[in-house]
Image (cartoon, rainbow, N blue to C red; front, side, top):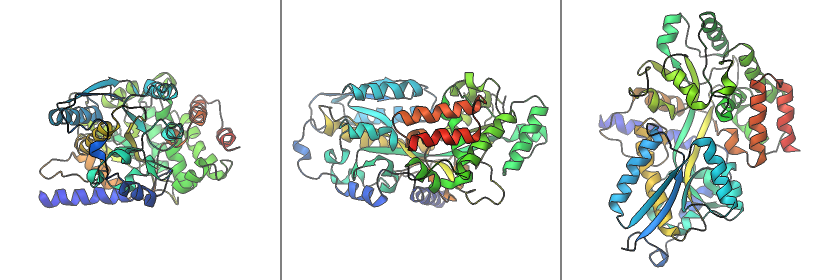
Length: 445
């Protein structure tokens, strides 16, 4: 078991080192940021949690479903923190994903951010940092606080050569396939795009909705366009377009959008998909009503939870189907984009920074064991049993040749809503692939 676990940790480290996702700074810059962790005067800064001073921190996050793997992970980490820091009171405010995005942006704009808040790195938090609303976390941590963090995974939280937040997991987008439903239908689990469309046709012929998606929450509908474009343009070319360095009016981006157009035309999704939320769509998969769902690695924990799922041990994780002869078939949607930040306006930035470092390191381990993500901190899992579905995802990710985070976290400001609206318009058959690419190009002009 020990050797097995050691091997697992090694594989995870390979995965993390392979994450050369988007960035607001280079890997070297991230390392520099970590090395700059403040060493002097931390004991004299305001509000150290090592003292007996009574301190209260307001903490916002988005884990509103108790069964969510990250919610379980956060709850465990929080209890450990409370036990070790009895003088610190934590006030939790949890808000559902979509509402949370608006809530945290509004709070930041009004200079009313809580002491600690969940956020996504890269473009999502760029405006927060640019507005001076986020504390440079390394200014409030002792030098050894980040020694277990793989700094290459912190790239999405590096802005202007400084580290402003800490990630706890990395995610990987995979196609979850209910193998039992595929076997019963006599359909092959798809490895290629041709096999995917053959499966869609077969399930439609049997009156089964092939793929469940909650397009009312545009982000999970967006995943299909994003990952399809990974297949046609690759992660590097996609990154350059998102950075506004090249045009979307190129064949590779039209082809990516065309895959989504073709999926919609083939009735791959529920005709009511635009009226369904992510949670509603997820239930269809967990109840074995639909055989496929493309989602982040965080879904694995819920798939394998017998209190939530009727498909425990019936699901396999596959990379998004390959294009025959394609150059980017082993690249992935995903990356280390989920993390915590400290508000610049917090009266207890040192305590808040220590809290963020403590929670993200603990969550890295607990979220992995919950099947919610791949750890980005060096963790000890000796003696722990790793779920086979999680192990499948780890194995897939170690073979990756490239990553890019979801476009709604790469982009910033109004570009995000423009992108998501364009995707929903493709779902509604209101936009062609060419019109989608032209719409994206307006962001770069």
